[in-house]
Length: 252
Image (cartoon, rainbow, N blue to C red; front, top):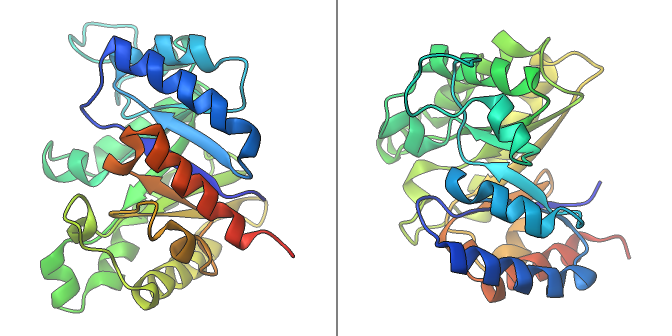
């Protein structure tokens, strides 16, 4: 299976910027040897989908409502609305949603259920904070966060996407060492084999200050099936450098 590079714009972007970005991305697609997904703010999803609809690029939502809808949920965006806007995937449980917006497992389970019901592929994000890493409890914490997968495993699609993002390495300039990434991914792969039915396969992305200069090294690690990229995905040139890094893992 090809590597999967997902760019998460977070709360950035303009209408003009999305148009220019899409044009630039289309130009580099012929040289890409990986699958690509772009997560822009919900406001720009229809525009991105319209521009990239004829390509293989996945349009990814950054979040989804825990409520199925339609209904009286002012400000919420349902999974069905995201599907209607052209989305194929959605991020669920990103550390910023967990820690800034206090989303707990009950909320995340609801979001996963709504996403799958609407035909969206959830990319379930997990990761430990710095103090947990320093206390040596990070594997225990990762196992705890996998509870949302255990509770929804019968609903999940055949390929289950999980993004491991150590919270202390998101937007800080700090990057987990290759040994730390390999340890976490090996642990998660083992746990997911235990949790998921044999009919389902888990694929693991790594996220945390991924950029063009370190992407190749990270993507070459066993068990790293792709990357979830934050600020470095805001420019096509930097995203292109990351996409080029996927070639290191291609068979000779």
